[in-house]
Each structure stands twice: as structure tokens, then as C-alpha cells.
Image 1 (spheres, rainbow, N blue to C red):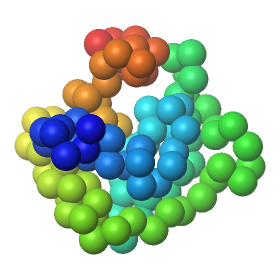
Image 2 (tube, helix red, strand yellow):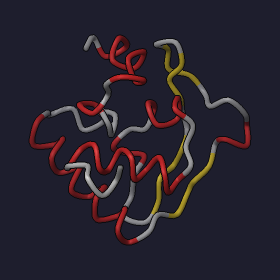
Image 3 (spheres, rainbow, N blue to C red):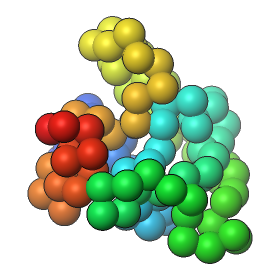
Length: 108
């Protein structure tokens, strides 16, 4: 999936595969949760509501590979170019299919 995906979808699937985030954690991931070397999980989206992750141990910072760091950097720049809201969720315009509850939260 990652190999044939383009831009937004590629970074979305790469985060899911490499970081092992739950669906709600992926949906709750914001641009400011990503740094050049890590992703911090501090919220989740479930049934269209933003809240804390499933368990206390789910609050964590995960190191990312250089490849994912590059993809995240490119994604952040794409989203900043599209919107002035720097705190948008990383996969804002990738949220399709199983991510429909997240789209409802965003009004999409």
C-alpha cells in the first residue's frame, strides 16, 4: 500500500505502519505533534469526539525513521500551504473510508 500511495495517503499509511498507532490516535494526530525525529500521541478521536487515548500508556512519544521524518516534513509543508491553521490534524485531507467519524468531526 505504501509503495503505490501518493503524497498525503503515503504519509498516512507510513505513520500507521511504522508507529503502530490505533485508528483514533491517527485521527487525533496534529501537525504540532510531529517533530523531525518523533510523533507524540496525546489525544485520540473516537465517535467524532476528541479525547485522551485509550489508556494512560498510550500517551507516548515515538521515534520515527529518517524516511518517515522526510514524509512528515513534506506533509506539514503541504498542509501549511493549504491552510493557515497550523494545528490541523496530519491526515486532514486523507480522511476517507474508515476515517469517516473523523471527517464528521471536521465537517467533511
